[in-house]
Amino acid sequence: MPKPIKKKIVKKASSGTDAGGILSRLKKSAEERKRFLITALAVVVLSATAIGGFFLYSNTQKNKAQKLEYEAYKIYYSLYQKQPVAGEDRYKKAAEIFKKAYDTRKSPVSLYYVANCYYELGKYEDSSNALKELNRKFPDDEKFVPLSYYKMAMISLKKGSAEEALKSFAVLYNYKTGTYKDLSLIESGKILEAQGKAEEAKKKYEELVKDFPQSPFAEEAKARVERKKG
Figure 1 (spheres, helix red, strand yellow):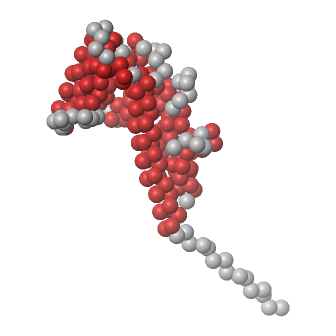
Figure 2 (cartoon, one colour):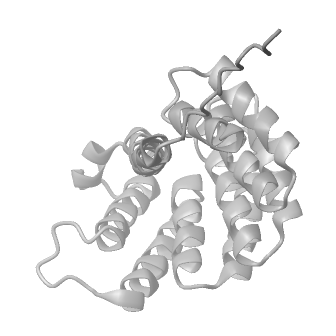
Figure 3 (cartoon, one colour):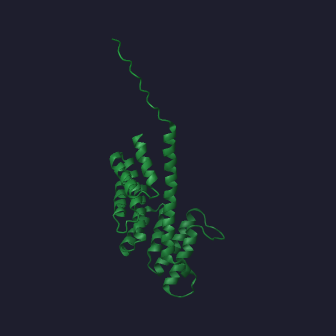
């Protein structure tokens, strides 16, 4: 009796289309993350500093500090400058004015930006000290304390300490407002992935996709999970 002819199963070759799609989504997500952080910071600054108050001519310490903050803010972002200051000088000048504002009136706004200026100048220890002071003096500030932990994590990565960065992201994840849980998850996942801890990273990405489907980072998390499956 003749043997039955077995049908040869042809494996479907994975095209470069899937990989290209994932890379495209990762690129799009990275751009969304940048816009998300810029927008979040802009909202915080606008709500915290009340720009309308910058144009008041009162002699109170508060308004003096706000005017200084606004001047420094314009230099930091190169806004409305007749002669924009370029390179490191921009951050040095902005830091100087933000420090004057902070000396005039203690504020998490000016202190956070002092830390940002130091960060841009590569003075990570000084930046970290300013952020620690912010967390110590303004522990209940729900706008800038979370942002300070994000910046502290970035400083730790710059200094080559992934574990310290993960600790800062853990604090950010557990922060009482829950505002930046999705950001903490995506960044923690990427650190774990870089450390070769694929399963731990996957859990972070899957939690993000499940619990924060509307997050600007959800697509990137999903793409990273799919990339590992591929």
